[in-house]
Length: 319
Image (cartoon, rainbow, N blue to C red; front, side, top):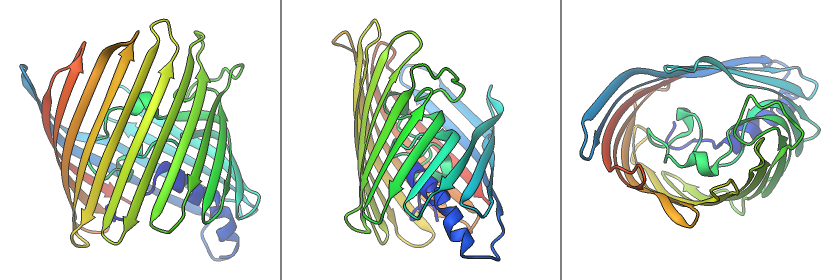
């Protein structure tokens, strides 16, 4: 159930990384696994002072293939289709070697660990993301990542060609992403990410992303705070945060409330300022079909800011 079992990119990667170990203990386990999703939606947005726009249809479809060789080595390949200019794309392709129950290394193209909100719709509590991921989250990356994890603590270091360019191949000035996680109880998770990069044009990028969550029974609460500094010619700084509550009233019906805000300053002048309130009920039709409904109000200021209200109905099929 999406409402209660959402995995962040870190948790998902950790489970896959350690999957080779558990597979050896289950001799009858099929080494090949295939999963995926189909995401469809209706979306309508009313822009203040402008015309309303409506869209519907297939948003995204994905097939995820994992193979466990049984000797501590596994591979993952994710292929996606997006109903826009991207078309069919190789999203992820990486291998993982688990040295032990606590230590694993992966290499290839993989998703950044950073960020409270997941990249895929299967990991979101509502239909839309905040919109500030481009300032504070890494993206799909090419490189090598090592992780140490235990029941209470985890640390990971990734050395990649670029924080947010999955096709980057220049490794002369690699980007670094570090993660520190602390889980004092089964209900509480605290994570911090520090990332730094130097672009091909000589820009230095520093990002600090922190978040915490509490999950017990039907209640999940999450908060996130991030800052970033881009030393480009216009010297851009950004900060933002979110607060989210999700409550499952039954094993079928849930509700998410979220508030998010962020601000971007260029040469000490506010160039972008945005805040949003999201109300998102969801209903589990069966084990494979989830319906998500969303009403969102955005207050945007800055050079291109316009207020907007939107509604969305999403059908998410997982397999």
